[in-house]
Length: 304
Image (cartoon, rainbow, N blue to C red; front, side, top):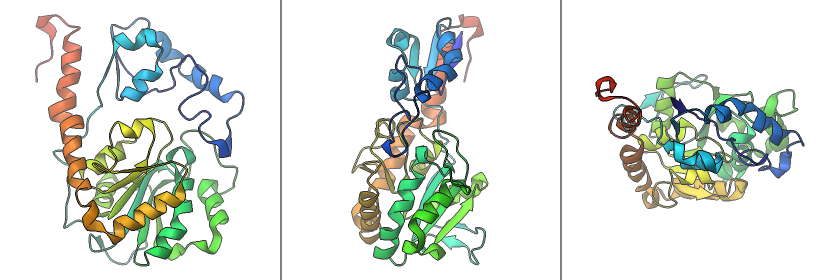
């Protein structure tokens, strides 16, 4: 039997991942045990499978050690053949009157939902300094206003409403575009036009958008946490900084915008890294098929 899992809190400890990471919104006493309970099925399943799969080394190491030899690490894969840089990209979004191009100085932030697990509150707190120190900069925020993971905001308008209330008139909101969830083709174009792409996450499963943005040659500022460090090397394929340090994030983004030539190597290096290690056709699919074939007789093996 073969088991593929994106679960990450399969662990003998009731802490780890999101649980206990954010001191600003401390988890309740039941959070860790709930995390264990929600992973009961894959935990039990691993006892009977011949081979298990996880997409990241960090996730692999969170499983109990007696399962480690039964699992292999390989990402699902990114379609680098269809995801790449486009210097002539343009996209028209929502209330914007004209199509956006690489000539515009846009910073992008993308998440399924604008929530704490994906650093939305840190991104928002970085906005005042970014917009003040780089007057031409504008920001595109992609994502819903719900909570997929972790603690929900108690504000009636969700975390976005909470942060807008906290920041008030410190931010020039006319330069910040909340576009909600967008069709995938537009999402790709947004990544392609970014002067700087911000990806933030607590220790959790990586968003595909990080690897996709790397495949498209984005200059990335991101969180210095274990899962991200598997994909991003500081100063080579992106820039890492402490998750909670919104001032450092703002300073780094401003520096990228003001000295683009000093960071011009990051995008091409990021793409090369993803092509080598995460490409679906040339790296990940062959590995998955080889692993599955190892469980099958020769007559039933999958052929590419």
